[in-house]
Length: 178
Image 1 (cartoon, one colour):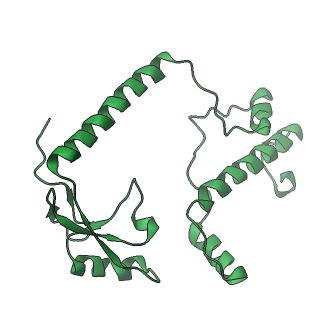
Image 2 (cartoon, one colour):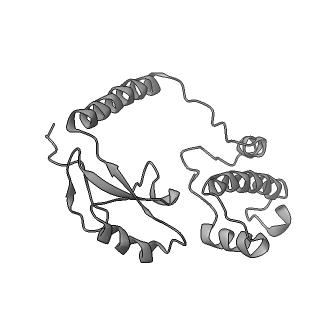
Image 3 (tube, helix red, strand yellow):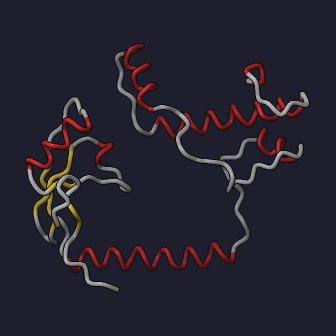
């Protein structure tokens, strides 16, 4: 295992951000997700981020990076929980996909294979278009959690349409199947 000399890199200029040092975060929630958190070494780097992301209203929040020991403990804890979970998953029987709809189960029974490994689980909606529609229609904002929920609903609708197309003896899902 290599010894890291810095905590993270600036999302704009890629300068190293040391342990136990000041950094800036964007106040907008989409810039602070667990999987993609943007950090900036200085206010000019944060300011360069604003026109690219086109935030309506955003500000920089000053934070402090963790100490080296705290960061290493967090990484070690994450590794320890990941290894037993992986070992348990390899010994356990495959779990049923809770998001599978009854229509999907019937479709599989009808001979159309829909293994959960083959089904894409990414967002099925163009977020910017949906947000623009909601804003134009109501003047309201749209939460980021709407896209995965709407995608689940769309998968259920598609599963039902697949079943109806299969029952009609077709290999093409058409508008009337929805």
